Image 1 (spheres, one colour):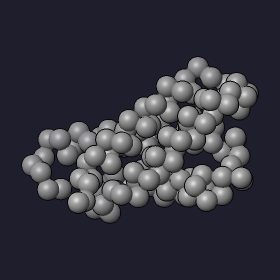
Image 2 (cartoon, one colour):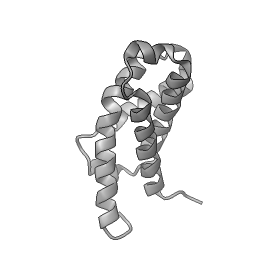
Image 3 (tube, helix red, strand yellow):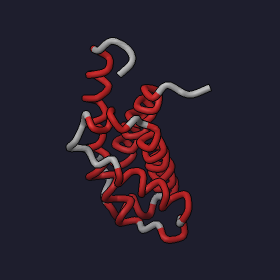
Image 4 (cartoon, helix red, strand yellow):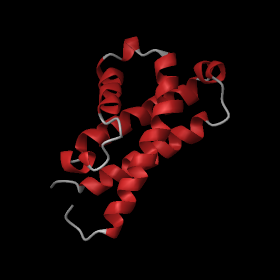
Length: 119
């Protein structure tokens, strides 16, 4: 049974919102030293990347300004090269790239909520 791609989009939005909450009001130094916060962000970045990989290409093409490859690459880094994960890269993804991706994902969700089913 195949999972509806809109559920992956919802996963992306939910995980991105969590990442935003986890880094809000936090400095890089605090983030890098807070093991639970760092791991929570890392986990949600992996989920975001996995969700992005599951979105149909035509859906991603509907948001051409979004960086769809960065999250997928980050997921692969976390999953396969976890030993080389750099806190500064994770911080940049969480504090800069995730908010931009979240804006695109919310816009896509709103667009597909207003259209008839079957993108």
